[in-house]
View (cartoon, rainbow, N blue to C red):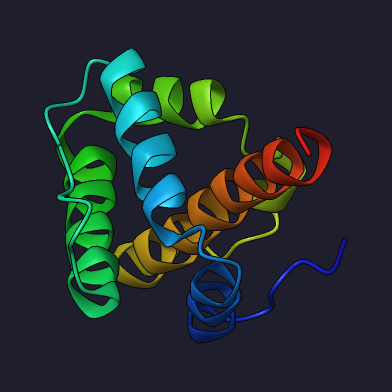
Length: 117
């Protein structure tokens, strides 16, 4: 499996395989499990998805750090990948973590689609 290196590549891949809605559903499911009040519309534009996810992660890092860690655990974002990020700029950290979240969710959706056929 080729893991996308950028947000745009990830979205392009999801749309090419008709899995964008599944990606949104997976995000919603995991945010619900993490008890975080965020529900993306399945019709959300990729740019809005990126912005809302980034804002939410930033807010969690700044004000609800325990919930942030719980979310990463539930989504199963690799801990070593998070530790490799530069934490000196919280805004940049939130953007990088948002992409890690999307990549992990994409892997779940892709594998489920690939092996359910």
